[in-house]
Picture 1 (cartoon, rainbow, N blue to C red):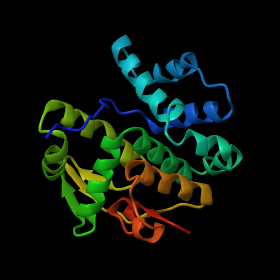
Picture 2: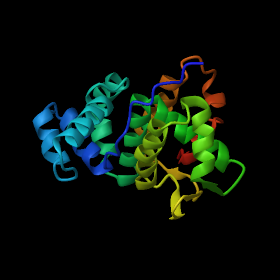
Picture 3: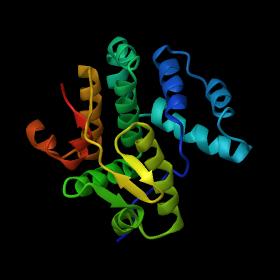
Picture 4: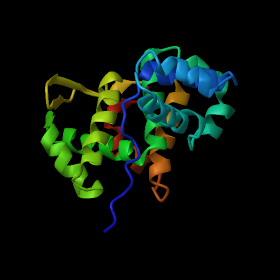
Length: 207
């Protein structure tokens, strides 16, 4: 079986994605502006180019861009609150990179039956899908810190991840974007009620 594409090899701070998303919603997104933000985080032209490609894919070329633009006023309001902002940014990340979606869904499966997951368990599980190579490891160390930054779970010590309970969105558009990020990765999914029982939804509580 051919391994699926990973296509992400660098963590992007959520603050940088937030700034990029704001500029996109305001219709003044530019590579130069994004690079200016990335230079605050990264050194070296190669790393900057990699980071810019990832940001462009998450924000500018996201499968959910139609939804974002149709609801731009609501999205702008939602992202003023950190919890909604973080959920939306992770949803966009997972829409752009199926690898990221798969990793978070795997975490949801493990956290459904146990409070703690270690790195080796995650590596083994995701390697069954993506292959046990350096690219898979790099991908994990790119997306997991972003999940941690968003508060989806925590890392009490190196190599250990701990369930901390779902985080509560406060805005309907946040919920919609997160649900759509699931649908992008599961185009044949059934009814909405069934979707919400998927492990992917363990992390977000709907109010």
